[in-house]
Structure formats: C-alpha cells, structure tokens
Length: 213
Image (tube, rainbow, N blue to C red; front, side, top):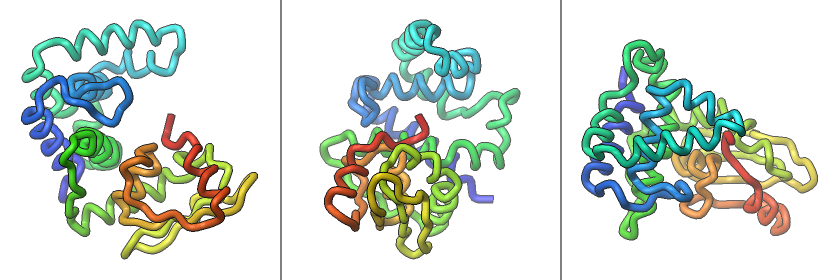
C-alpha cells in the first residue's frame, strides 16, 4: 500500500528543517515551530487534544503547546517525522492513511504556501484520487456553515453534491481534488479553484467559516 500520509509527513518535515523555526504558516498566529508542536500534541498528548475542546482548559493547552514549540526545534521536527507512538492507533499504516492524509497534506501546504516563492506542486494521480475520496467523506461537515448549496467538481474525478442550498443558491467549485481540499479546510485565499454561480451566492460562500472547527 502506498502511504501518501507518510510521504506528506516526510516532505513537511523536510521543509520544516529547511525553513527553520520562525517562518510563517497559513495558520493564524503560528510559526513553523508552532505547527510542529501542534502535530506532536495531536499524536502524543491526548490530554491536550481533549483539552482543546474544553473552553476552560484553553489556557493550559496554549501554555503547553508554547512550551513544546520553544524547545529544541530539531528534536521537535524529528518527533513529527517519527510519527505516532506505538500506543496510538495512528501508528498503524491503514489508520495513519485514513486519519492523517488530509492533516499532513493541508499542513504541508500551510508551510509551503506561506512562503513568498511558492508554486503549486504536480501531485501524482493516485494522491489526487485519495484526496478526492477523503473530501467526499468530509465535505458535508467542512461546508456545513455555508449558506449556499455546494457542488464540487474534481477535475478528472467527477462531481459531488456536498450541500443543499439554504439561504442562497448553489455554488459550483471546480478544481483538482488537492485545491478543493484546501478550500474546504479554509485555505480559500491560496486555493486555486473556480467558483461558479450568482455573485451574491459566491460572496456568501467566501465569507463562510469552513473546515472541521
């Protein structure tokens, strides 16, 4: 089995090593060190992952993430590179692929596309297919706050009706699966997608808070 999630993890870590700890990312308020700390917490600190959903624990989570982020940067990136520990189900290849492909693809692009000289990558067809399958599984959740209907057209992969219209009509999003994933997870400013529909409907979608949060 080709492990696309693992490949994205390793490429992200290579970029984190190359750029250093203080480069910008597309995640508001996060430098490269903060993004790396987030990934370590996600796989190795379930207490802090749970705390992230409890408002009164937000301060503790922020302090712990800050402490991790400002530790030894090379060791931090190496911890991300090694992946989840054996006790975490995400250490198993099939679970890793299911749970981490979009996570590491999006965060890799968060680092890449925050740099002034970024260019879109030519991704393998198999990876585009996996991203399309992942997008279809999550699109109704990531687009749930949109007031418009959503139809996704993945170039070379078909179409998917992600949401029925609410207060507005339907907007058609067209692009490669990779670019559609980035748009669906809130990276609208850098996602190279085409938007079709009424201007007011497109404006409403552009203002919507997308993603899993």
